[in-house]
Each structure stands twice: as structure tokens, then as C-alpha cells.
Image (cartoon, rainbow, N blue to C red; front, side, top):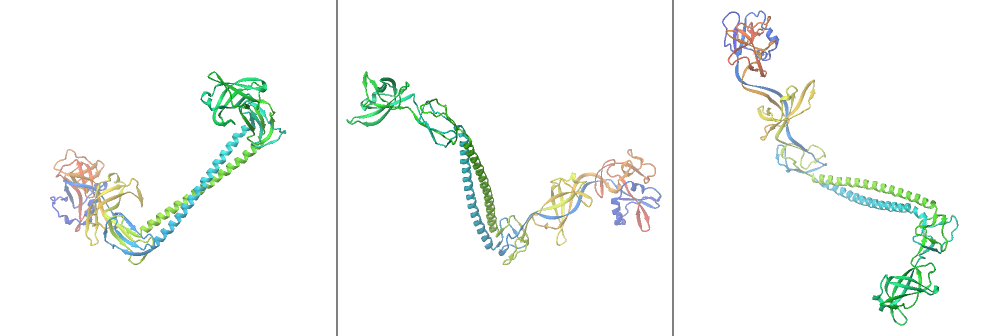
Length: 579
């Protein structure tokens, strides 16, 4: 820095810096703007021009602030229940590994709570099982009731009684009009009058010579006629004749020409190898099929076609019933289905309630077991015991702070980044952290920005973005909870041209330096009237780069070694006043 006498004498160089008061030095660091240029105008009397030179240096743009150091991970290990401390295995300041036993509580109450919880669980399990059985029974009842209803609904078709096959009605019931018919009531007997059968017995000597389908000639003495037939069945029964012969049964089927009836005596002649074969004795004609016709559903009689010896065809209506009784039964069955459905819903709600009770009981047992296991408290992390408020043999209250354990190998520092600088702060950026120890010594640490919030906050009208700095603290020099100072380098230029901050003049022509030169530089500019530039200096526009409170980077406009104006000082008594 140089000083120039402006009262006409020779320039004074090398004035000792100690002549500048501290207040002046602070003022020099903050001077700038158009007002600083205006100070050059007017009559300053005896004054000194303070100069400096353009030099090469490294310049940094940084932000500074304060914060508090906190362990990366900490945990409070508090007694889960009120109990006496049976054993205490650590003290404040101890370093423990993960899983280390810290203290033990009297487990008596916890064991009692576990036993009660298990009893409650057993009761809940029984209740859940009973509810499940009731639900299963209700569902079965509903299924059976719905099935019965569907069958009853399908039985509406049974209101009309029809003939199951071609035949003739016999033993027809005599019914009054509107008679109430009950389910299962016999109405008539239907016989296959057009088809007859004759059961005969033949000697076992012919068993292998007769076959199903073999033709036979059926003789009926009552009508003195023969009717053709065929063997329809051969049954290996053992009919013993009075003479001691063993016979088998052959059933011969034949069509009724319309003159035959059940009970007529008949015989069948068969031919085997050209010889006639006859049965042991005559048999009697029988209908091929006889079936009782009954009502399947109840109801009042509406129409009746019941007549003895009346011929009918398969599917022909025999009787028609009214639906009143069946409809009444259907309504009763529908009500039974609704009641069964309600029973299922009630049972299902009971199952859900029982399951909730069971789940609650299971959770209670789980918590009781955890609580019982928690009577022996172990370190969930490796760290240092920062606080221990327990005493062996003394009762500890549930929830009170017992031991505070923290992993101080890595510390976290929460900082606030100004909204103007947050765009230049990113994860991984280096950060210098300083903490004053208990003895007043300063400890410096190198940290790293771990995260920067994307959401800003505002306090007292100032906006900022929270960020977290991670600091390795393997030796434990950084203390938990103590305040720190940090410096975050936002940008840095190395081996660049720099000048003192007060040397940059902010004019209407832009940023300028007043450069001392024997002749006007080619890039000098005129600042207009009203702006006084010291004699022998010229305003040279410059492009600035990084800046801090002391220096400004000059990217273009001047060269290293050039002498530049910084301030004008006016002597006042024994001191200098800045202009």
C-alpha cells in the first residue's frame, strides 16, 4: 500500500500501516458505491492518496456462521417400568459397544404381567374358537335352509301330478272337490297295462342253452291264445321242486294285445336245438311295472283326472293342486332363510370381535415379553454414555431418563444457508468447523455438507435454507451440544489478479479501477464532470469475479503490478480522516 501527498509536495511512499486506526481499516473494507467516488470531489486541503498494487493471489468466497454440534445418533434408554435397579454396569463417559449390558431392573413385576397376559391370551383363544364354531354351525344351518327353500321352490312344478309312464290307473282315490291333499298322499296305482311279464322256472339242465332275447311262445289258456314274447331276464335262483329238481328263473316279457290282464295263468314254450322246452309249472301274468302315484306337495284339489282303469300317457296330468299351501310354506321357508342369514351375520360379528380380542391379547403378551426382556437393558448402538441418572439399589420410575447413549464418532451440525447462496451449496461440499474446547482451546475439523433442504424457512424477516454438515469425530475432540463456528467456501479462484475491495470504484461506466500511469491507458474512460480523479490516475473499466470483505478478483482490464488508487485521507490534527 502506498500513500501520495496531494498538497504539491513529493509523493510520500511507504507510510507505516500502523498509522491507520483500526476503525479506519474497517471502513476501508466496506467502502464502495457511487458515494465513494463523490468523496474525491471538492477541496480536500492537505490529503494523502492511499494506493495499492494489483497482485496475484488466491481468493475465496465463503459464508460463515454458528451452530451446535450433535451426535449423529443418540438414544435414551429409560426404564420401561418402575422397578429397582438390581445392577448398574456403566457410568458417565464410558464407551460401550453395541449389545453391551448397561443396567438390570428387578423383573418380578414384569414376570407377573407376562403371566397375566398369557392367561388372557388363553381365554381369548378359547373365545375365538367358540365363535368360529358358532359361525360354522350358523353357516351350515343357512346352507341347509337355503337348500330346502330351493327344493320347495322347485316343487311348484309338482302341483300338477303327471303319469310317469304309459299305462292304466287302478285303485284311484275318490276325492271331494277342494279336498286338502297332503304331501305323500296316495292318489292311484299306475300299471303298465300294455306290457306284461311272466316268471317261469326251468331245470338247470337248460341254463346254458337259454339266453336273454330268446323268443318264446306264451300260451294263455283263459283266452285260448298264444302271444309272442322274449326272455328279458335269467336269474340264477334255486327253486327246488317237490321232486327234488333244482330250477332257475326265466322272465318272459310280452306286449298286451288288449285282452290280457294281471293274474291270468300262462306258460311259455321255448325251443332248444329243435326240441321244445317247457317250464316246471305255469306261471301268472303280471304287469311289467306297477307304481303308486302320490302327491309330492300339499295343496287344495283343483282338478282331478283320477278314474279307475283310465288309460294314461307318460306326462299326462292326473291331478292339479292349488298353490296356496305351498306358497305359505315358501314364505315360512323364506323367513327361515332370513333368520339364518341374520344368525350368520351375528356369528360373523362375534368372530370378528373375538379375533380383535385375540389380537389384543397377543399384542399384550408380546409387549409383556418385551417388557420382561427389557429388564436387562442393552446398548442398541455403540457409543458413549453421556448421561446416567440411575443408581444401583434405588428404584427407577418408568419413563424417567435413565441413560443417554450417543454415537459421537460422527457429529452433525445444523447450519442455515442464506437464500442468496443456497444455489451454490450442495452435498459433498467441504466445510471447516471450529469448536472452542472446555479449556478455551480451539479445535478445527473438516466436515462435509450432508444435505441441503429444498424448502426454505423464514425467521425475523430473513429467509434461509437448513443444511446439515457431517464431521468425523473419531478421537472425540468435538463435544456434543457445544456451539461451533463454520466456514463454507462457496467458490475459489487460484493464481488470479486481486485488488483491495475499496479499490473498486462503482461508476456509471461500470466497475473501474483508478490506475496510476505516466500516460493515459488505451482502455481508460472519462467519468464526466463532477468526478475528480487524483492527478496521474486514470479510470480503467474492469471485469470483476469473486469477492469477499477484503479483496476482489479482477478478470480483465488491468495487469499485475499496476498501482491503483484505494482511498484519499485528509489530515486532521494528529489523525487522518477518510474522504
